[in-house]
Image (cartoon, rainbow, N blue to C red; front, top):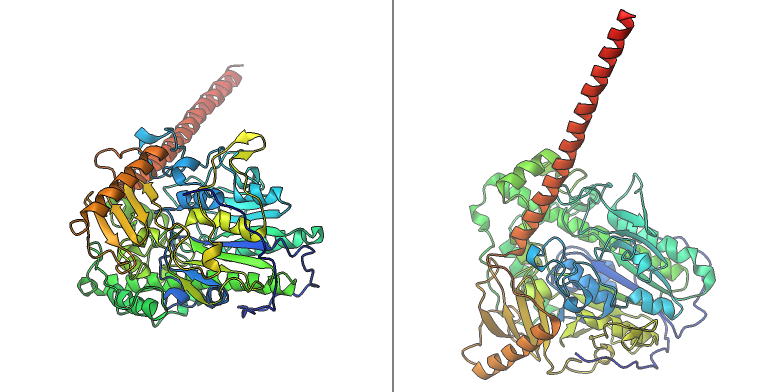
Length: 605
């Protein structure tokens, strides 16, 4: 992927295409931007939303505010990210491929043998320039709220990476109702504001809080007259799946027919919406349980967790509507570019599938069916519902399947007629393309591989502006685009994809698919197209060499590594607790001996 060129001239504004807000917002006096040539930018990053987890992509639950942005802008139906969160987030922030920006793997999933190797920092390195850096240097106020997961030391938190104001979580996830970590994974919920440890309010709910904090930041600097870059990184719908009771209750009548029926229904809606070809084949994943074989209690719990998942998505969508309403009220809506995406496909891991995990979690949380999704719960949708969330694609998070890598992307600029409102673009697009796209739309210059007098990683993404204007095909043309994470690998070229998934998702064999006609990856073309297969294999090897991709140790799986990480963290925590207990016990004994000897001396005296 080559560097991009900055194109100008997309600054004309037309009458607003109004979105219906979810609820009323305060109406301070309008304060239009004094420089309409520099639009505001709002990035709405969802966590673990599958390909059809938005109404305008096929979902059955309500996302009216995100859908309104979709119909006022463009939907990308062939947009790809990484198979897990922080590699995607680093590519979004920098426009640089994950092995070049330090996220060759995450801290929770990296094998010990790879730690510290070039490209495997497990944090975003200092050889890249972030969106915050780039837009801040161009005169923007830059804000970030919510999940960060790109480094927790003082030099790697958002405010050290170009953001003027930031309230962020350094971990992969945390509780949505209180300042509590994912038990077993982390010791604390590492929330900070502007680099200092922060305390959450008592009435905290994650989606509401990160949105309100962003509104507060925007309002605090309105008098400056500067445009803003606002990155809202929601915890929804990462584990633990949690939502307000009213949002869960909204879906009380749904999901009783199970995940297979839902997967089929979503595939039909996606085709009707033009998101996938009509009649495109799809597979039933081997990891999808048979709904008919579940007992009554298992079904009840499964129905409840999907109701909570739907409620969590709708609660997040409501906050998007509240932000949009506020921007309208202050006169900034028409001059704002909105980008909505998910960081990877749907999460299939069931934390309760292992006996020791189940015993541990049952001691930490109220795991009753009635409490699923509420405060004090710890729930996940598992592979069954994840297959529906990914519909009609195959696979999910952590894999290199389309269900792991292909997610919804919406780009909307309601005041700009050059983005085709309501259109669906099926050309290949990649998360590294977001930074150059926003830079071109905003008239912000590329850093050109040098920043503050030092050489940095050049942007590898390509601007999507031609596609936003209706140009056919992809800005990547027939150029190869490589990917690797945790041994799961892919090479995209035109309409074709070469892919390998290690166990348990796959068998380690390479396969070739025609994504234009077979987005569900049902028909392997390796034997039918041996020349294309060989050429794309050569392309992948060139990508792997250029990016320093390492082979995974024998027997490695991301799922096993996460469990090993969690139990290692838990063992460390228990060791610290045991040390404190032992130290306290020794101190108590010493204190008792001192008291006894003193009393004895007094008696003798």
